[in-house]
Length: 138
Image (cartoon, rainbow, N blue to C red; front, side):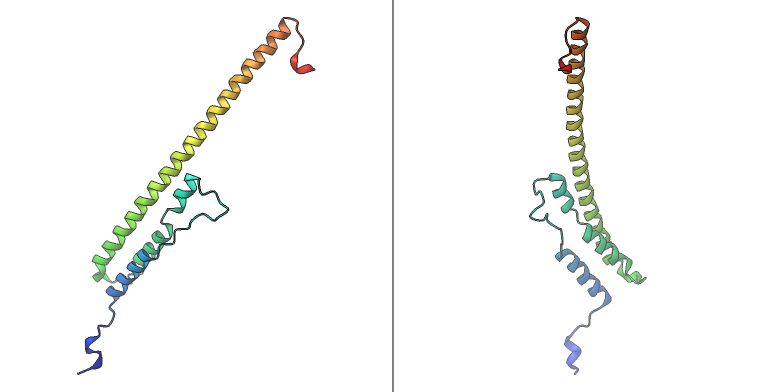
């Protein structure tokens, strides 16, 4: 009886499953540094994107070595990859919505300032037409 009889040698399938487990366990989402604004919702969404996991899952799919016996493992890897892509798209949509809201707010402020300038220009024109002094010429 061999000493190795009770030990199972790692198979390519078990190694791939361990690789997937490692990818799932080793989540390296970067948090903002202490000096960075931690209240910026767009930055927080971007740090929550699983970009490293997407890269590692994609790499895991590319290293099957042409072995067609890994269909179940490939299916699992693709499913995990699609979940991470779904998460990333959700975060990017949130960032886009936040950005659109900020742009709308800025555009509204610019329009309000333009309206005030038109009113002020109209007042100055009326003062000049009435023969008054130009308030800005002092």
